[in-house]
Image 1 (cartoon, rainbow, N blue to C red):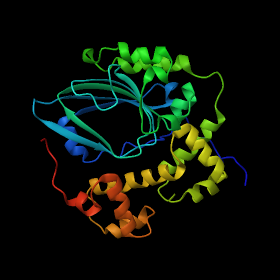
Image 2: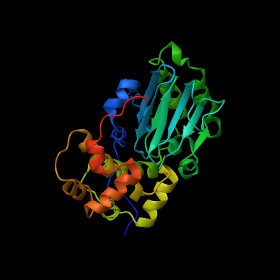
Image 3: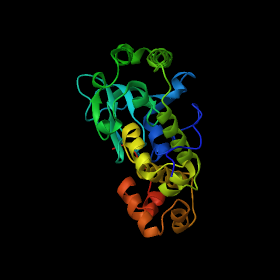
Length: 291
């Protein structure tokens, strides 16, 4: 079998979903979320820029829960109650999180983030994504100083709209002199996994893109930080949860089969492992408010 893909991804083709935020209607009651599209140059490596802001009264909190994505993030986080891993230096790189991502929102916070495409951070600055998986790392250990400093020096209280063009300019100045063909191939595979809901096994991906299992695993380990099986399973779980959030009232067995599970029992087990409750409980549970 040849170790090559049939095509490369358009630099602006979506390679990460916005799905995965559990109970988004509840989240929106407590946290302001904003997103920005990078300029065309930065889009080669960056999926989007985003910002969170909240001001909750003393004694009140909200647990935000997000299903994991195959992406790394660079963030500046100023909070009265910092999340674990964010210390005196508020600019950090968060690698792919393989479990449900939970943050207790309380007090006051302003966060600005760069959501890289899967593999985008490695393609831009080097390194090995596996070294950051399930870790929060000081940004100065991963990215060039001028990118870290651009985030550190921006006053998030003075408005968030000014940050994206500044980061666009810095990222444009960092772009490698030569294209990374392997990164292009990784993007093509990721875009296909995300966009084609009929892809239910890594074997299908290998056949379509004419790449061996060993090579695909090596690409994903180095660039993304997790294996292709994990990525494909997360995207299909995102699809299932999004349907439930949209009011899906059909058979859970049918939902499981549609997204690649052989039976409802296996689907339920994986759903509980990732989401924390059964699909039926998630569909029917009451809204979760503040504590």
